[in-house]
Length: 159
Image 1 (cartoon, rainbow, N blue to C red):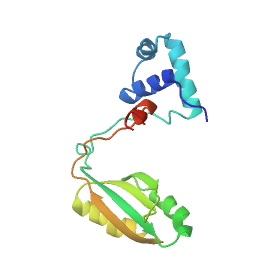
Image 2 (image 1 turned 60 degrees about the horizontal axis):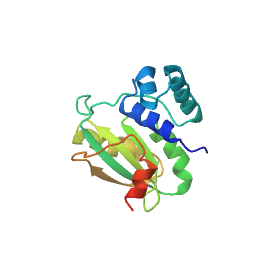
Image 3 (image 1 turned 30 degrees about the vertical axis):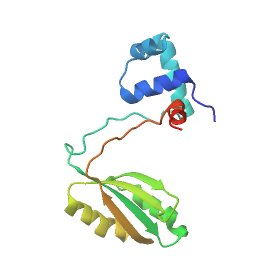
Image 4 (image 1 turned 45 degrees about the horizontal axis):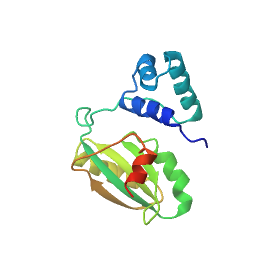
């Protein structure tokens, strides 16, 4: 896979900060014309570097103030495909990560309340065939939630 150039990285960071930025704003940032900036963004989309655009919502104001991370252990690896087919249909499950270690999956789940979370865990999640155990961690506060990968230079500067 082709790596992202510093110029394209600059465009990606600008779009993460403001996905509604105009071609003129992006062009000014990279010193290109608006059509050239648009072309670079379209190429990033075609390469799969940009997966889509969305609005970031305030979970509390939209009725889902409770976030939890749920670790899932399946009874056997053969259940993974069926588990994934069912879990990705659930709208309150925002993220599904296949993990290394003791757990098979880590889910990011939003709920309206602790009672709603209990209903989700007991009646919905645990009804999925093959689920052996779960471990739930409720989020008290979020200090950082970043939709962008770190720059390569910032990774190297920490070592």
